[in-house]
Amino acid sequence: MPQPPITGKNSSQVNVKDLEIESIDFFVRMMSMLGMPKSVGEIYGLLYFSPSALSMEHIVKHLGISIGSASQGLKTLRSLKAVRTSYVPGDRRDHYLAETEFRRLFSNFIKEEIMPHMDSAKERIERMESSLPPLSKEAEEFYKIRIEKLKRLTRAGGRLLPALAGLLKF
Amino acid sequence: MPQPPITGKNSSQVNVKDLEIESIDFFVRMMSMLGMPKSVGEIYGLLYFSPSALSMEHIVKHLGISIGSASQGLKTLRSLKAVRTSYVPGDRRDHYLAETEFRRLFSNFIKEEIMPHMDSAKERIERMESSLPPLSKEAEEFYKIRIEKLKRLTRAGGRLLPALAGLLKF
DNA sequence: TGCAAATTTCATTTTTTTTTGAAAATTTTG
DNA sequence: CAAAATTTTCAAAAAAAAATGAAATTTGCA
Image 1 (tube, rainbow over the protein chains, first blue to last red):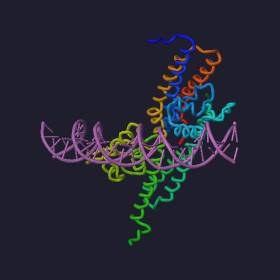
Image 2 (tube, rainbow over the protein chains, first blue to last red; image 1 turned 30 degrees about the vertical axis):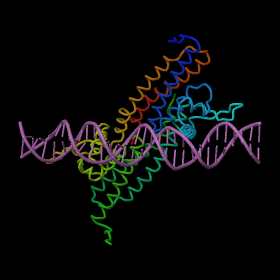
Image 3 (cartoon, rainbow over the protein chains, first blue to last red; image 1 turned 135 degrees about the vertical axis):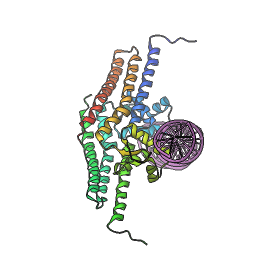
Image 4 (tube, rainbow over the protein chains, first blue to last red; image 1 turned 60 degrees about the vertical axis):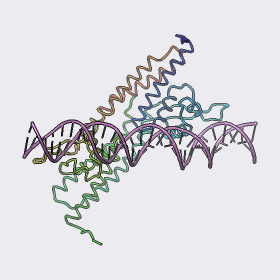
């Protein structure tokens, strides 16, 4: 059986591949915590440790995913500004690079994925208040306190979350 | 067709039911942002606006979910300390109340659901470092910087997230 | 202790989400 | 402008997640 060389180009390739696998694993988990599908984590994980911009074809072949997934995943990552395209001379295809400033990534994520929910939560609380019927004093007190707590929750969320990205001093 | 009365007990019931529906809707969305299944949001939403502790049977009937879902959902909520049981004299069943201190709820959520991931992320980064092969100076520089960024990310997350609950001044 | 009520567990079913793959659309350039 | 390469879209398939329901277990009280 062939023994892999201990040093030199070949061993580096193997080990950089290991690094890549760890990276993909890392980001698949990270992204899935944020509710993103596996393919999105895989693509970002691959790009994160790539020194050069990669074409979609490269991503598809390397990860063994379909071109549909790749296209969809890159679209998601673009909308989060987690990747950017870079021009490669003499190649008409788009080439992608990972955006690695996590502070900006979080800020985008909060703005795009969280804040819209906060906004609609506020509307829902308003509907709660308007559907609060006349009740006995103590019952009314109970419901009002609960509604007030929700208001504070969404207010705190709406202020704190956007501030959060700023707090991140990486 | 029967006209519902505009005021009085009956109308209040209808409107408190509306409130309840809004509450369930609110928490189903909120919980699903945190990756919790619908049933968990429904149960919490129902309990949140209930002045009295509710039995599992009540929850099952009221929400029209299975006892399996209810049992599983209550287990999840208990583990997050989002509900607590209260003793009801002359009734052997457990009765549940919503825990409404969101600060504590978030603190538990972060401790139980997020921090374990952070810990395993740190291990994965260590594995990355050990699989970094000897490379040219500039290649090594590139990979080291990327790994360092991940370290800072997890360090920041590990510090900031637990502090976050404390920041929440509801 | 024994029994009935209450709860949990878990294999199966249902629902939801993600991926695939091929057709349609777009883009580039010869 | 046309042809080829690339990318997007989307219906269908596959995979993953959640809900069901009935059997097994636990609980509390007669």
